[in-house]
Image 1 (cartoon, rainbow, N blue to C red):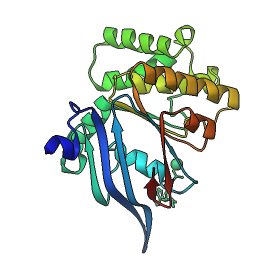
Image 2 (cartoon, rainbow, N blue to C red):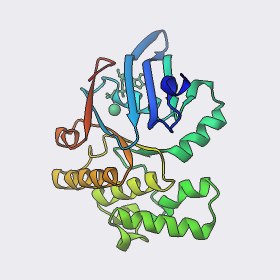
Image 3 (cartoon, rainbow, N blue to C red):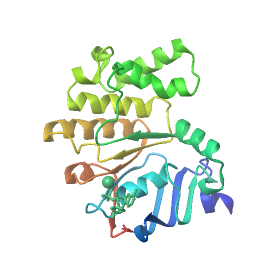
Length: 233
Ligand SMILES: Nc1ncnc2c1ncn2[C@@H]1O[C@H](COP(=O)(O)OP(=O)(O)O)[C@@H](O)[C@H]1O
Ligand SMILES: [Mg+2]
């Protein structure tokens, strides 16, 4: 039953969060950010996570990506219980299998687009030459073949987000987790990011996108809502 219980990846399941809660302690008070969330992400999925501000969307993404661990409940990633792994093993799994995209891009301003995309490959000890080739190829995929040597300050918000998406894809992860990826972008640019996500998903990338943007959510294959720390289908 281990396949059914957690998913090893060979059954098409990437990550399963089961009845997860997450408490944040602040001095003597405890904030219960999640109070019973269930999510399954399969290969080929494009899942939108919606819900009001403060409902627990970011917290849920962190748990799905092994950035953080639940207070109770379980998260299995490619069949492995994240809480049972060492910190190092979890970091290695994250680096290899999870691509993260943030609202404010989180690019290093002193590095060019291609250098930013190379970073996760360098962390995986990919050779310099292969790094260059793979980073250039993935930037080409997101439509930035002519911006490889630009720094974030020389790029528009939409272009910066595409660099960040390219960086998330560089290691060919099992899933890309994006937290409010269009939060800083105008409507036209947001639509282009949605189109890019749809294109990547059609080519096989699994995506989970937390968003307030109803148009983005409507463009996903599937949608769940988080309300007051609980998921509802
Ligand atoms: N590091 C933290 N420490 C304390 N409280 C937190 C922390 N992160 C989030 N919270 C609280 O947890 C709840 C859920 O936050 P979050 O997951 O960021 O929601 P969302 O992404 O839906 O806006 C909120 O009440 C928030 O204030
Ligand atoms: Mg959030």
